[in-house]
View 1: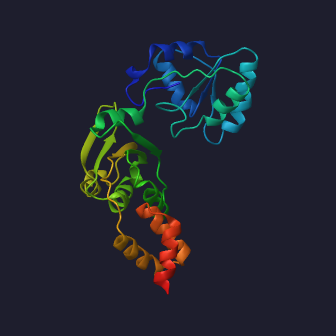
View 2 (view 1 turned 180 degrees about the vertical axis):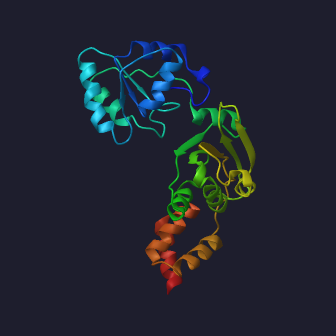
View 3 (view 1 turned 90 degrees about the vertical axis):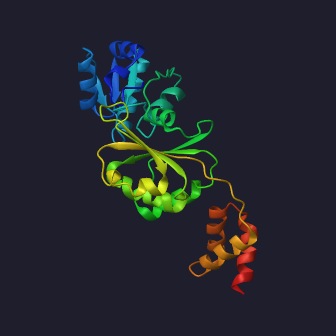
Length: 267
């Protein structure tokens, strides 16, 4: 069940009905959910269901359902399972034959996409990128060629480094948007090329979690000369098979052909 991502008035009437009737509410953080219930004059039995407690909470939820009870699953903000816990609960409840009913509502992903001004006909939600730069750059290289708007979640403490890696790997001229404090008093939506956003001092260490959207890049077919140049550089660091795999991922070319070419260049 979706809960507000900031503005409490984004709760739906249906969500309030469900919370009022639930025999058990599984919450990412019971303290946060208790404040939400209190704001609307509700009370319910809360049980923690974060990434560490989900294995313990799932059997409890299934037992309540087996007794004919109602279980509501909420995260701290937004829609559960979207980079939040809950997958195991939903999967095991469905496998056990219990109906799983979505209660839609607020979503930082969709709010950011709707306000971005970037293409929305096709998008890829990739969640939080890896925390370490090397892993993050590899991750970004894998999705660089996706012909869709890319949607990321990111923490404020890592935002500047992530934007710098995005500009370097995805291309500094690609259109991008950073959404901060969505639906809250100081909601901020900043648009511009990735390189400009990476250099913007307001993104050095903002508080909270943010939504970063990157528009699709222009499709450019790599030439044989591009492949040879990339292979030559990679062969200075890697074995032919590894060099071919790296260049294939970066340029979107067949790995087997690149491997044969890498052997030729190595000789």
